[in-house]
Image (tube, rainbow, N blue to C red; front, side):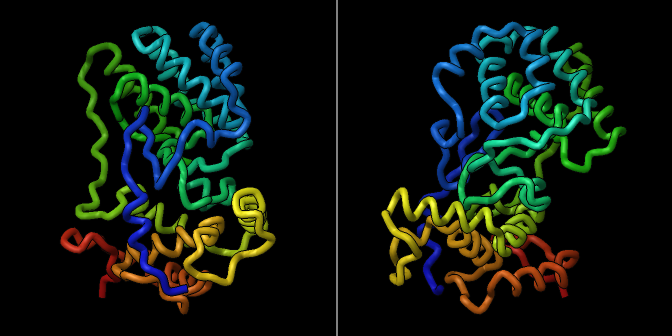
Amino acid sequence: MKRSILLIFILSFCHNLYSQRRLVSWSQSDIENYTKVMYDEAQKLTSTELLSKNINDKNWSSIFLTLNASVNNHSKDTLYLKKLASQITNTKETSLEGTSRLIIWDRIISGDIIFEGKGLVIDNDLFKVGGRANQFLQSLTNKNFGYVRINSTDRELQNLKNRWLNHLLNKPAKEYKITEFKNAKIPEISSLNAVEALIISVQENQAKKLITKNCLKSVYKLDKMPKDKDSSANYCNPDTYTFAYLSMLFGNEKVDETKDAKWWLSFWTKNKDRLTWNNDLGIYEVQK
């Protein structure tokens, strides 16, 4: 499918919201099982109840409720912030439900989240108690001392916890320096982690097929993809976005139909350790 990826450029934007970034589009209405009643109830929770809730949350909507309640009601509660910092070393992991349009690159690579082409990009691993605690702290303070990743070691988590506690005690704490991808068309997809996740996401996946089928039925009243390559219904398939992203990241103005999922997987396997970012062009190149 040769198609200009200009539409992707137009639709994409970076928006900082509680240490989160939108890719193409996202709103709270995209969160599954998220209602105003639930929101109102969460606002009533004490800091102690929110700390317990963070340990036990098992779906994305619950995590977002904890985040909102924390930001709205406890941003100045230093004791709450310190107890959140103490949770960073908690490596308890849960299999989150309702993750539609939640983008955590590591979890897309691991197969725990299906990439839908757009959504909310979060760098912390929300599948872990410590990752959620770190996300809340970043949102509450607008500070960043690092991330909780899927493979963060105990030592890394302890160091991150100590940096937060030092900051909260008004002691020196070195902030995390975010990698800059100069001239990136879409910064949210420009890390190598994101590139790998994009390549993994275009591989065959039954859950992705179901997402496409449901979108075609509910939005366009169609039972299958249209023959018209320029139909907006093609964007029901997450791969339409993903192939456009990959083309853009490697300097192609149009999607090359010969570069299918298998081609990209082979390309990544062969070249992943030789990819370098060209700051002038804002693309990846294979180092000779």
